[in-house]
Picture 1 (tube, rainbow, N blue to C red):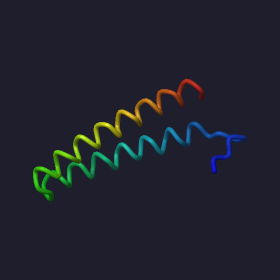
Picture 2 (picture 1 turned 135 degrees about the vertical axis):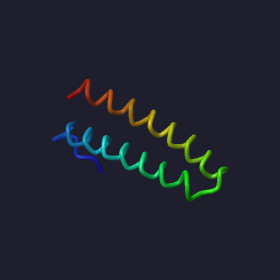
Picture 3 (picture 1 turned 90 degrees about the vertical axis):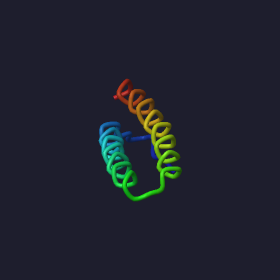
Picture 4 (picture 1 turned 45 degrees about the vertical axis):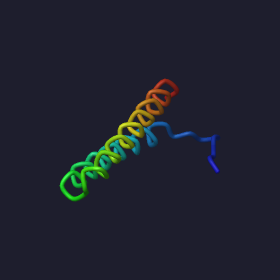
Amino acid sequence: MIDARNPNYSETILQMEELKTILLKIERNALFQLPQDLTNKLFASKDNFMNWIDEAEFTLRNYA
């Protein structure tokens, strides 16, 4: 359960940045280690997830 009494927007934003970095590393590794069809699915899913992260980060920055 989320404790909304003491929000830490800056910590969440920092974790989102770390998550983006990790996803890019996974993408680079997968490019050379997975079959093309799986890589394409990963790229599509990653792009959708990165868009969600960007939207959430934008929202948090407006509240921080």
